[in-house]
Length: 114
Length: 112
Image (cartoon, rainbow over all chains, first blue to last red):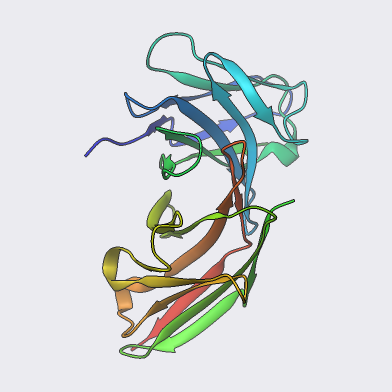
């Protein structure tokens, strides 16, 4: 069964450092998303990406964040200068269509900023 | 704006008992609703989805949910809980832009 894969599963980084979280969406999907889940809290939307550009972003997704689809398969989230409060589980998701199909989630990357 | 509210952050049931996890939604347009399950240290797995085809939706692992427009609810049920159902459950509504808005989640514990 096709799945969304994320690497790495865990990342520890020092405050101020840049991190890149990687995702390989399901191959025929067109819509890509990043969400985050701070420990003990709900899953929050960060950004959606379609047709090689950001289609929507939340207020969380400020200038320190960026997304890219560098080739036909990978979808990355870059955090430029990490802060302690960026520590969270980051989930990538993809879907075939915008509305009436489900989004498939990856297993997540646990980011710890120290 | 669309939103979901999950009543009860923790629900505890005995093995074999009925599971009922509550979700109410707010939406000015016909909603697309989803239930996801998250096992410890894992990602989000789709349990079931409502996309206006049928009000009673059956999902995986014996779960089902009923869409009730008059009550703006989409509660998740399972007739008989199993130990393996212990997890966190999230109700979500899909916005017109495509992204999901999640509820705060309900942690289900199953006692032997």
